[in-house]
Image (cartoon, rainbow, N blue to C red; front, side, top):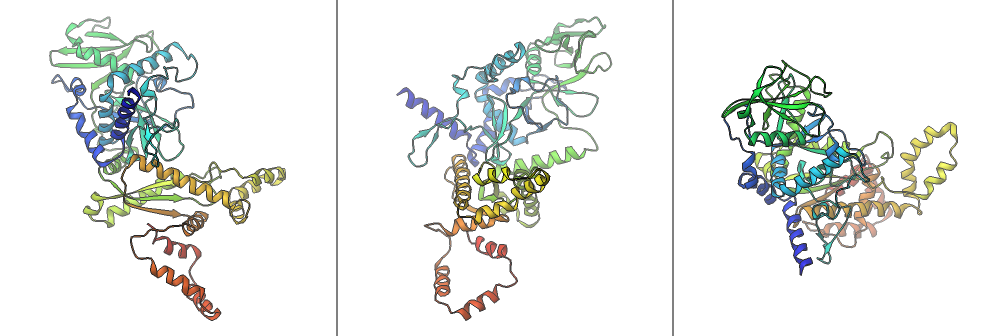
Length: 508
């Protein structure tokens, strides 16, 4: 009975995190009703006080065995190192965080203590028995029974459902492809180092400042060695001599982060006080935003749009030759394609069309983990003088030769179909009851693979009558050689890809 209750509870948690339109709306609304949020509201009239929490993710991927508590090493993050999540994504992450805040903070401080004392083994030296560290149980679509996949993580969906945030490990990870984890940082206290932009502080610094804030430490001001009448709060577990200074009276206060002359820190002193602090997120007030800031705003607008509009068309992007080349990156290519289609949608679709449905493009990396026995034979017979040319050929045109070979043809087809089924299953777990369109977008060899897979399906379903296709097939089987020449003449001038595209447009 206990196991059943645990499963039902885990299933509920997993369902609440699925990337459905109702869940997106619920997570955004719950944050305003959550009891835990009240302590983060502004309790004073100080211009430095605010209640908006903003989540960030690091641009540079985390190392394989790196833990989130060890990043960043500086007290404040650099503007060029982190990107903001969009407003709605931040609300969804914060709502989920507040639902389990006590447990998440407990795990976070344990991890931070491990980093402070030094590594004691694996990076996840926190007890693996903690239920929060286990993946949510997901149902097998065939049996309906719970199935546990240790490699499958379910987090808070962000960036249109392409990424999720693991709040336990404070990591942002891709859902539909194998990618690097990126540090997710909760921005609650911010610092301004000589510019007009407020940058988030590390969580351990923010938590200590928050504790001092709730204790209204500025009411206990004393004269500091520098002559400033302020309350000093020493930061524990940080750079030696790092401290916060609070000044002001009653509901008006100001704060700075400083370091003693004998201490070594990334803090740069300004006017003897240090760097200015504020509680709560504040947008940039720069009159001339940089290109990075403009790109950041555009990305946030797209993510906010994706969080409000349900997916009604799923497109799997099947690549062709060349994905084993060093500079080839299907993920980036699909990302560029996604931005281009978004710009075209803004120009040519009506506002009703854009707010009722959107397209989700998912890359299908069928070649990445496919190992063929012929590759090792080619490697052994490669001469040193032509290695560069042979590597280029092996990563490109050899895939066509492998597919034309009866030895490796089925292995390639299996790799594509298995990857498509895997991606589709992941999508259905996060979008239960999906009944929209599904399309295959193939490029180069990928279009041939997609076409062959669709042509060999035992059962075909279509939203429109298919009898005319079968009539054409019967007509082709009973036609004379002269008819075949006429048919070939009709299709002359069209490439094979164009014919495939015309056929592929009928597949939904």
